[in-house]
Length: 100
Image (cartoon, rainbow, N blue to C red):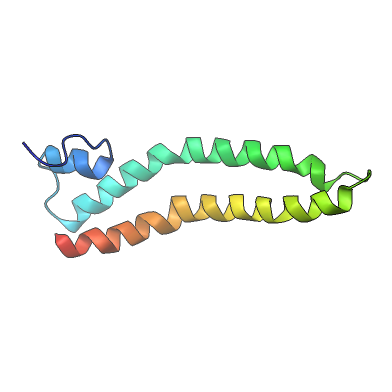
């Protein structure tokens, strides 16, 4: 039995199925896994940003402090989304391509 049996990621599933032979197979497995993450990540980012936008538009007491807190949080959520959907799969491809 393979050591990847208990993992649920697309990469491990493709290894268990015997479909991981070339770098094209690796790329396809990464695409398959990344596509599964688009909707949950986009929904999470959208909800967090929607919750922080009213803070950015507020004018009441303490709004100046809250704006300084909300602005980097929105930037972090946007950066995290880009990193998870675009950068991490590319890094994973470079890392795992060496072992193929």
